[in-house]
Image 1 (cartoon, rainbow over the protein chains, first blue to last red):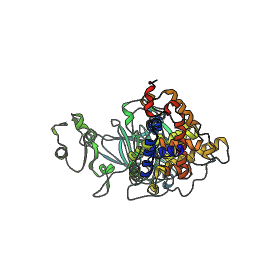
Image 2 (image 1 turned 60 degrees about the vertical axis):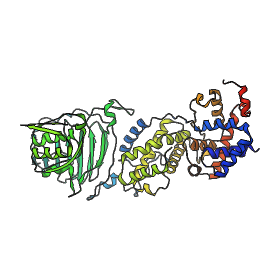
Image 3 (image 1 turned 135 degrees about the horizontal axis):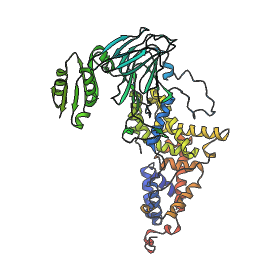
Image 4 (image 1 turned 30 degrees about the vertical axis):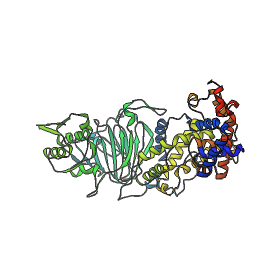
Length: 367
Length: 197
């Protein structure tokens, strides 16, 4: 018997590429040559036993996402060229955010782009002393609209604080923000506009966008409506994210260390620490969910009840207590325009299957 | 082994919705195999990981055009191969390198010897037999056996004919069988004379 033919048939069968005729031929040969049976069985066993390969894909993925986010500003791949010299960026690569920076885009939302990033937050840098500072603070339950000396409009949401140098005349226009604000920045290419929050710096050239960075919230969000912004993480100043219109950036405010790709806190490691995503458009009238508050509308878009509670607390200046872990995590989507606290709670209750009572300035929610 | 349909679904979701979950799922499905493939060529785990990362960055770069790619799996392997060869060329200054000329060290190790009812020594002999195969033959064996690639896919990735893939695999299997000790070559009914070792 031709052993070569036999093993060819075996290999065809093992790889799943044997035709029915070939399978039949193999079975025939096995019947005629029982001596081959044992070896065939063993080869079969070896084929089906799986090799282990030392590769931790979870850790590698995290490192990969970090490289991906770095890469957004430097589009040349290291191993793509045979020679290591940096080649000129082909004009064909117009899909990079770096290119789109120059153009104004309006209309339909760019789609979801998520970037994982490990973040280490530092305490806020000391402000330069001696210069008079203006500070505007809003309390819970109230909003404010101010105009900066350069004409930039700022809408401050509840429980927020913004401060800036009184004269606002330096080479850089700077403000410090804690809370949530919507900016409509006057374009001045010679003087970049920079917003400092606890974890990120947002640099703009003349644009409208929303920044949300509350101390008691777990994340910092920046949503871009028009123009372009460049975001720098305060812990890693060399990493810059450029937002395209209709994108938003969410940064987790946790203290986390990245050392060779290993996160140091277990519970936070499941959460993406930096998320770049699409702005939520309310389909009916294409208003941007993230900035509805500027128009005095209260909105939640698939947010967990406990996060909504924080919004309600600030909006109405009340205290909200929710009991029940499942209830806390229940997501709600709702839009309110001018409703009072009672009406809002009632509307949520109908859809959300829970109970509540309001006692002066305190709302208690239970399953 | 990732089914073609799943990969196509992921491909579409990444292209149309920039779906990050799909992107991660794709990475989860294929990164280990691609890493093993690259490692066979570049021989450094770190370099292989960077190469796989570059491959997935490229996928992200061209996400709009992903639906145009017929077989994404083959595409990923092919770029992995190209990037890996570029690395070798850059670092070893060879002018033109083909897979055959490379010192390929395929990563093939076997699970539990007890499960296979053969001893660790025999497994070592088997591994040695594989190591002695020509590079291309070893790669074919790895791609088809470990990664479950079809002949056609392996052929495309390695830039050889399907016929060659078929023959190379047959040679590999034959060599494997020859590495098994001779007492196993007896007809089944006489094996009762030997006790388990």
